[in-house]
Image 1 (cartoon, rainbow, N blue to C red):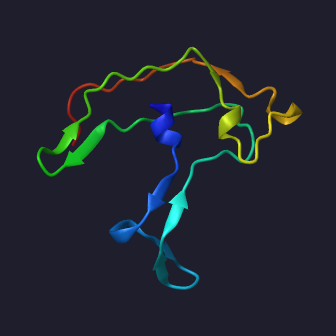
Image 2 (cartoon, helix red, strand yellow; image 1 turned 180 degrees about the vertical axis):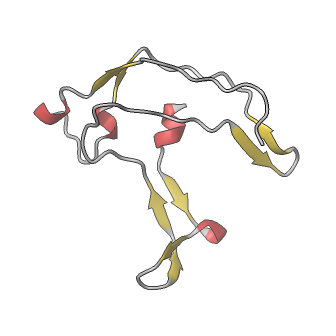
Amino acid sequence: CLDYLTASERLTGDNRFHCDKCNADTEATKTIALGRRPQTLLFSFRRTLWTKKKGLHKDERKVTFPLDFDASSLLSGHDGGEEDADCHYRLAAIVSHSGSSP
């Protein structure tokens, strides 16, 4: 689940990035990275998918998350140095929504 969340995404075709500076749509690569280590790290997983066959529906795949998580690979420009040494987190809570939403 985290691999999917943090994977680079190529923005092409109808999904190209719109640059406000040059007012043009251009192909780009979207990547999630942390500029510095936050004290608290929160992940929110959206469990809805849209497909032509089913329309909008819930993703029923099981989500697992480790109790201890090393987030140093999410730091931009990380090199495994001293700054990255303390980028470990411990799972503190899970919120699980059930039922429908408006």
